[in-house]
Length: 96
Image (tube, rainbow, N blue to C red; front, side, top):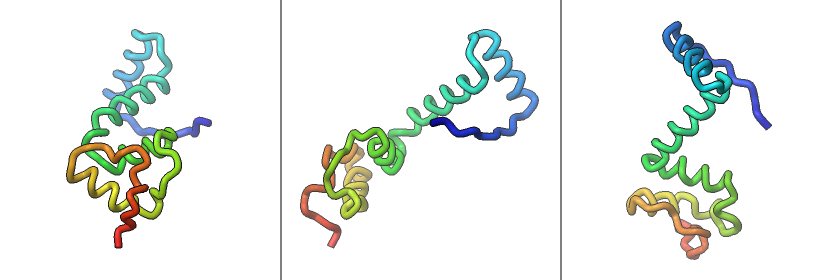
């Protein structure tokens, strides 16, 4: 389900949005959605927390004990530069 969002744009931003909509045939909302997704992809490698939340939301990480070990899993991923392993919290290390 989509939710409405109100965005304030400068005149130049509004003109750009209107021009892109006219040139591409896409709705202004679709252009904004695509821009948001593109921004998210670029920022993805910079934030272990965003990567974790995206994976959780997509169902890529099912099961496991993430609620118990999320700090440990995220800290390891952040230090290593890698994404947490599938089922990342199942190592038995509960941060204690």
